[in-house]
Image (cartoon, rainbow, N blue to C red):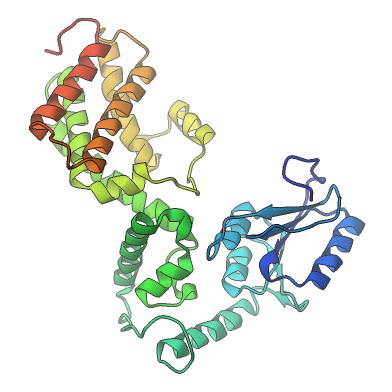
Length: 354
């Protein structure tokens, strides 16, 4: 088997195979085609797969779980790639990303027939809902026309609950749809994949935090006072909204909306604040307060280092308060105030935060 660390085939359109359900005879055909045309071929499955030695052929094993292989393929697709699958929701997502789709009987799936295939799949899901076909979620009341926002909020609430209870990596869009009582295809009307769901949930948390910090900061005076108010607000928000905080900061995310390089580029880009993602707006609000200290000649170290130190300390306190509620903490307000003041004092030129 050739893995991702070995020699890559020339750049160009690639073939992605939903390999868990791919017959061996079809794999052999695809192997020969990849070699003959010198096209990159990747089999994605949740089990080990044997592939012939080739610079063009590789297999990628993903963790077990509904849609894990699908999400892996969709995340890697580029326009013009070919996807081989019988999974209709995966086909719909691939087409939306500009890929071509071939089912395992050799028929093309494209914009001209995907709607019919989705409709057929939805019909079967609705029959299950009505008890006229085996399996599937229990019947659910349909939302009247114009009230789709309620369904969207139901999906978000179910996703947040399941992510926290089961772990993000153990929850698929299919399981979320079943919890809400809709078909997986219906969920895709609102969110194209699990990563989009998670991004919206995190952004909602960050938007609340940005708004609360702005309102609380209005009570502050000079730069030290503004930084103190901001960090007190951050810690209190995390404790008061523990589920949202855990989801945004304390659970491993397999699908990161931004890479480390993306974040660094945003920090250095000078783009307007409102153009930044909500999470980055939160951090840049902290960076602004620290920069104020530096401009006032009150900071004894690099402003970016100081901002990250303060954030790390605040996050550590929130994490302890959320995960160890049984510990005999002192008065919460006194603990938060002293922790914040101690951090600010340690980063300033003098020994006072007055």
